[in-house]
Image (cartoon, rainbow, N blue to C red; front, top):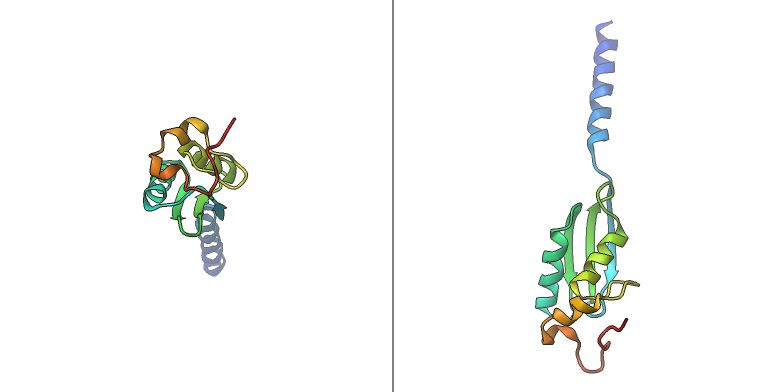
Length: 119
């Protein structure tokens, strides 16, 4: 009888531990207007302030942002919108025009690249 109750207790303990683990999701977002170290830092700092973010790694050379987040707190669309609200395009979400215009001139665009977003 002791073995059965010990077995049941251990099952309950294990299920409680697994139930407390958060569901984590990962994605790589294309950010074609991300072009320098300042852009990288701006996006990373902005995303780290968002609720539910686990990790953020921007790469201005590859024009990508790798994100990991808790599914119960945010979703990929909110993350893309947050990047757009910082002034950068994120996959299919266009940068917010006002945020883009507030970026330093060096972070707006390089000749031959994407022009300023329009509404």
